[in-house]
Amino acid sequence: MKPSLAVVGGGIVGLAHAWSAAERGWKVTLLERHARAQGATVRNFGMVWPIGQPAGRALDVAKVSRARWLQFSKATGFPVSECGSIHLAHRPDEWEVLQQFAAVAPEMGYDCEVLGREATLARAPGANSQGLLGGLFSPMELGVDPNQAAADLAAWLTERHGVTIHWNAMVGAVTPGPQVQWGSQKLSFDRVLLCSGSDFADLFPQAFAGADLRNCKLQMLETRNQPGQWRIGPHLASGLTLRHYANFQVCPGLKALAGRIAQETPELDRYGIHVMASQPADGRVILGDSHEYGDEITPFDQTIIEDLMLRELRKVFHLPDWTIRRRWHGIYAKYPAGYAFRVDPIPGVSVCTGTGGSGMTMSFGIAEEFWNEEP
Ligand SMILES: Cc1cc2nc3c(=O)[nH]c(=O)nc-3n(C[C@H](O)[C@H](O)[C@H](O)COP(=O)(O)OP(=O)(O)OC[C@H]3O[C@@H](n4cnc5c(N)ncnc54)[C@H](O)[C@@H]3O)c2cc1C
Image (cartoon, rainbow, N blue to C red; front, side):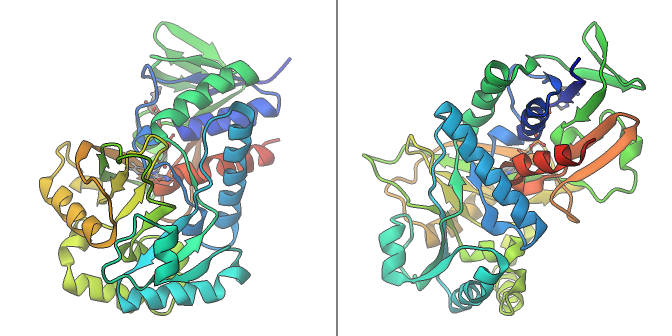
């Protein structure tokens, strides 16, 4: 008989584990408290972003994930755009950091090249030409529609991999056995994985005492569909983004760049603002973002953050139509010491969370790593 697994949480982490486990012969039951995924997994840019990962194991995991997204696309027809990414440089120190990174990138496992101003504009119609010095193009990044990905993955896991999914199934307790309780049900499983995202501490709060795991809130914006067939080109990132992702930490010029930004525009550091843009197939452009941590997080979105983001977005990106159609915030759990956090609070039960701003990039690879190590 197949061993049984309960996965709690229908976000990308739970879905990724369900897929990897089902492929290895587990009988998987997934429990999601809402009628559909509504957490960080549907609130993001839809960027699969290997270039942001530090070289070594994290980058390898991201590449595994990338291949899994393409595998899913091939199997189902789910649209995954092989759009790549461009980091734009509008300031000399940004341009210097991009060139420093490009010089060492191949030996670290990245595939990217610096492009001069004209070549950048030719590739990225969404770049603001004013003051543009050039860009760093990477072909590795993928685009997925975040509003659609979780729903399509869940449907495919059910149809193709026999995963049983219970929607509107709020898990209230996991007890030794392990047993999982939702509604009036209480069932035993061989293994339980809690993939409850930013609500990681609801079920086993004591397991997180002292853990360096904290929540982060991000504000996001979305334009209406751009006119005609207009496209931004690859995913876009700004010079501000260089201080955000770990890969650029190898660049000697990064410290001075971060210092310049802190001095010129401390309000951006105050709200953790850097700007990026992605464009799903229907033509809307997803824009963000800001970062507020831990006790700073309130239920209220702040116009000051939105105004600052739009100010910076307009400096570096060009859109024919900046009309904002939707705004929202998302919250993820961040584990600064690694690309995922795992703890085993009782025998047979593991908590998997802490994917931070990289869950769409890393989750499939994280799940593969987990299930490859599971006896
Ligand atoms: C604004 C924003 C932009 C981002 N952009 C990107 C990006 O472009 N690229 C990238 O790689 N990453 C990005 N991320 C990060 C990525 O979205 C997250 O790392 C990832 O979605 C986390 O997935 P998760 O499954 O852990 O959490 P979630 O998606 O939040 O899923 C957790 C699920 O668990 C369910 N749940 C919780 N408790 C229970 C319970 N007791 N019973 C049943 N169900 C329960 C919840 O309802 C929820 O559906 C972004 C995140 C945000 C917020």
